[in-house]
Image (cartoon, rainbow, N blue to C red; front, side):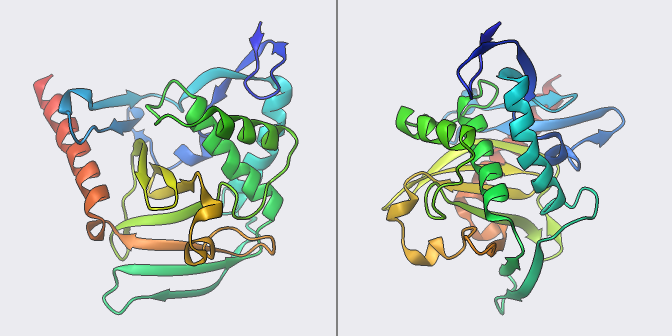
Length: 258
């Protein structure tokens, strides 16, 4: 028995996924079955690490009742952007790209605001309470806001803890997939941004998103079920490119040293 991290009740805890299993669907090597998580410290290589995982990362976090609550929103997300059983109700209204094919805009509609936003909030919450990821420090106030919102199934305003969802590509038709890059923090003048790259999808959570420009908010999931997903070529983002390159260089070095 222990305290559930969502309802705060003392109950028997389940071995909970930090990221839902469907998010690993393209990560596993076929034989042997495994995938890689990469952590990089740009300032100190000694703090970098690579880890081989046989199955989705789990911890004892939530009770059975809270697992059921979370699974409802996971199942919805599995059918939308991940198309698990081909019953996707969200659809692309318009796709466009810059003339140099470095940036792509996918304008979506048909999302259930409540279901997908709570899924996004649950991902952020699990990342920051997990001991498996080296997540940057997030304030207790933000953690509590997330916990109570998820538990009460309140998706919050569209611009409260908004998430910019991006597809990171090596080339127009080649996604930077096959690995998880540990959470890392970036900043702009108005907000800290917690990012995690999972199989080519980068989730960028604006922790102070009420304060950011409307031009960024316009890409968030909105109450009417519309959302923009931005695709971009990795090499246009020097910071992200350096982070991934150092992670891969470290991975190759440690692999060759064994």
